[in-house]
Structure formats: C-alpha cells, structure tokens
Image 1 (cartoon, helix red, strand yellow):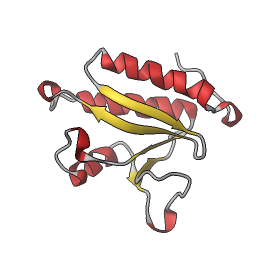
Image 2: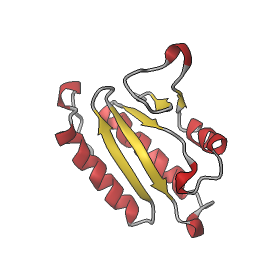
Image 3: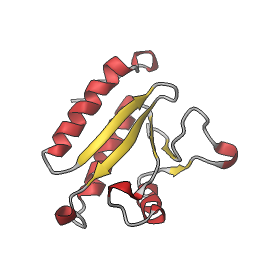
Image 4: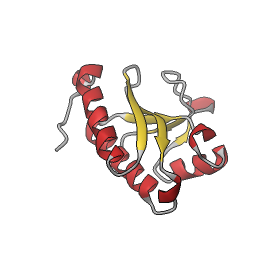
Length: 126
C-alpha cells in the first residue's frame, strides 16, 4: 500500500525508500532500473531502465511504466527522464514516442521547467 504524503513530507528520506522498494520488486520480474528523487521539482527521475532482450516485446516495459506512473500519481509528483539509447533502446525518437504514451511531454520551449535537466516530464495525474 502506498502512503499519501503532503508536499512538505516529500523529501529524500520519505521517498527514496519507496523508490528502492519499487526497483527491487521489478528486479524480481527482470526489469533493472535506477530511480531517484529530485527535490527541487519535486520529481521521481527515471535514470535507467533495462528490460532483458528475451523479455522485450512482451509488454513488460509498459507494465513497469504504468506502475511507475501510478506511484508518482499517488505521491502527486512529477516523473522526469531523458530518453537515451545507452541501455538498449533502438533510437531516442522511438523512446520519446514510447514515453509519450504515458503522458510525458518534451521539457522545452516556453513551457520548459528549469527545475530539472531532464528532457521529458510527466505531470502528476490527480
């Protein structure tokens, strides 16, 4: 069960253990990830996600992202990431399209949020 936090309670000590547990649960299913808490936005930052080659195309990455979005929404905080092919993605444009399915938008232009360096953001869905 996910506990609701007020904006004042959103800090590293409260959020990072939730992220660590989330990573451990998904690692049991074969998904390796690194999540961190960015206090200035505040946001959960997806730094790395790896779905093993033999499990790609089965919807595991989508299930992971849906669960991550649900976690961020329960905390009423942003999700942030920068698509990168370093961990097996075929192209940045394909990854951008994938993340857009979950409500991520490019963090650029007039609406750029300067509280993060990440290139894509997802607003909390309340």
